[in-house]
Image (tube, rainbow, N blue to C red; front, side, top):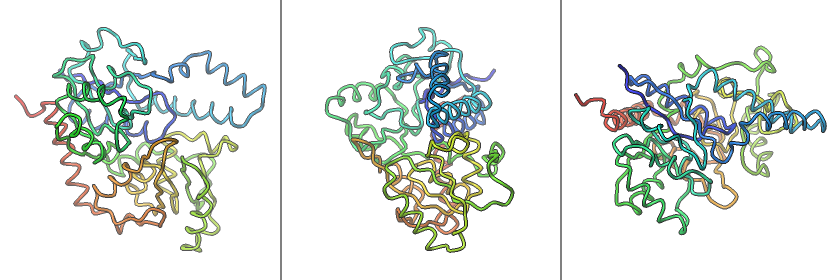
Length: 361
C-alpha cells in the first residue's frame, strides 16, 4: 500500500508559477511512489472561494462592463479548470484560523513548499505553513522560500520556534539557508524549485496552445509582475538586437484590458513560453520556464512594495552557474549546462528520498 503524502503550499492565487510548482512537486512525489494530495489553503484568500465572491464578480462585470472585472473572473475560471484537471486536492482544507483536527492522522508525511510559503510579509497560519499540526517525524520542507533577505525583527522569535521544530528542511534560496542557520544553527541545503525537476518534454505533454494564436504566428511573450516603467525600454532593446522580431506580435498577459489574453491558463502559459521568439519577464518562474524550453529571454530583478525579492533570481543563476546579466537577452542553449542541472536534480531527489525515508527498510 502506498504511503500518503500531503503538500502544504499556497493554493488560492491565480499565479502561474505557484500552480505549476505545485503540479511539479506532486508529479515528482508520485514518481517516488507516494499517493499525493495538496491541502487546500484558503488562508487570507478564503473569501475568493465562496459562491458569493464569484457571484459578486459576475454581477460587477455585468453592471460595470469593466474589462478588469471580466478579465479577473475569466482568469480565475481558467485556473480553477487547471486545478481540477491536474491537481489532486484533499477534501480537508485549512484557513488562517482553522486546521482540521484529524489532518495529521490522514497522511504519513507532509511537505511544506515550494514557493513563498514562509514569506514573512504574507499573512499566513504559522501552525499550517510550518507543519506544527503534524507529528514531528512527518514534517518535511522542500525548497521552501522566504523570498526575502531577512526576517523582520518582530517575527524572529516565531520563526525560530517553528523552524527549530522541523528536522528536514531544504530551501529555494541561499538567503533562506542563511536565515535558517542564523535562527537555528541548522544547515539547510539549497534545492531546485520543483518545476526544474521535470524535463521540457514532460511539460509539453500538458501545454495547450491558446485559441488567440494563429498557426505559425511569431510573438514575443511578456510576463511582467512589477512596475512597468522599464518595460517599453526592454521591448526596444529586444527588437534592436533582433530586427527580425520587429514584426512579432506582443503577447502581454499582464494587461487586464484584453480579457482573452489575460485569462490564459497555466497550461497556456507553458505553450506561450515554449513557442515564443523571446520572453520578457521579471518573474522567477517566467525565467525558469524560458530556461526549460530553451527560449531566449530577458529577465529583470523584482522588488516588492516594501521588500526585495532579488534573492530568488540571484540564487537561480548561481545554482545553475548561469552567466546571465539581468536586462540583457540570454540564450539558454549558451548558458544552461545540462550536466549541472542533472547534478542539482539528483541532489534534490536524494534529499527527498532521505527526508521521506524511501531507502529505509
